[in-house]
Length: 400
Image (cartoon, rainbow, N blue to C red; front, side, top):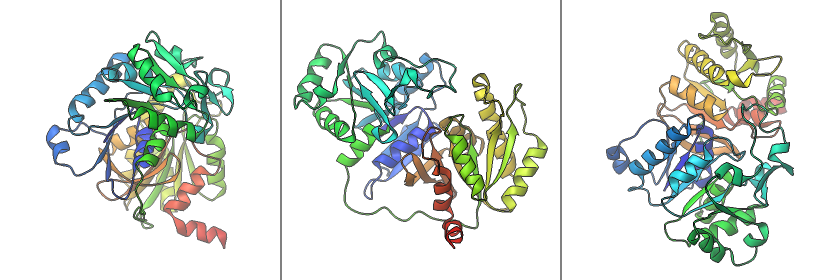
């Protein structure tokens, strides 16, 4: 099985959704060769294309290149897109459409549903919500707007629940119209999956919601092995998201006693890490888990986001070089996670388990832990739960 994702936190989300005791998995970050893929024993390869900030042409090229490289070895392909419709979704669909495709982007668990072809966030249409406030662009009104000029047909909730969904999907594909499926519940996504996989050579395109439906369909009995815990390792939490909910998550983690170091995020963004910020972060890590954040009293300027992510990654790299023990990482935001791991030379992850949906615990080739999580995911206690998962002794101490 092959899954392609446009960012790292999404790749990990998909890997966790499809993980099972009998299905080994690997998340690939760097370029791989046919020889390596042919020899590896993993039955699930998840490729982070790192294409969300790319141009349309670059994103299409990344998808086609991955399909050419991997698909001979991986007959079932899943395409992961952002549940908030960010990134190069039209390019992904276009590149995948040399075979039949079905699109179902809902993530009901995260409050993201699709009604009459319009994505809703906790019942509010995406274009009326604040979900894109950290983006440079404006959100689309409908999913059809995202795909234009490619023709599509909306499969309403009534279509999904009609008992005739398979026939309607086939008719839409025969008419060269991309089926876009409404979904209000996980049961709707299960229904869509069942109707879709009966279509020959079909390709699934969706968010973590559809991937979870696929995981449920492929589930086998048994428990995953217990994740390794390394209390002797340093633990660094890096928050690189400008999502509004992150402030509450960081506040709860600070209240739980985790020391915080902020780097100056005001424009113009500095090119190199500041020695004093690196020194403060090193001091904090010597005393226990530490959190690296963006210090932006007036909010992060969207035009500076790429530069800030690179600065965060460089600060982490400079810090980790001087830490006396191996360093476990918690990385929020897909681009932040990818830039940090690139800077540390980590080109693959083995997913182990997830703390909550989207917060995925993986192991690096050197044995350190990495938890990745999309920036917009998680309740207010998300970061606290992740730290308690990696350091159970802290939770036991707090309870006493």
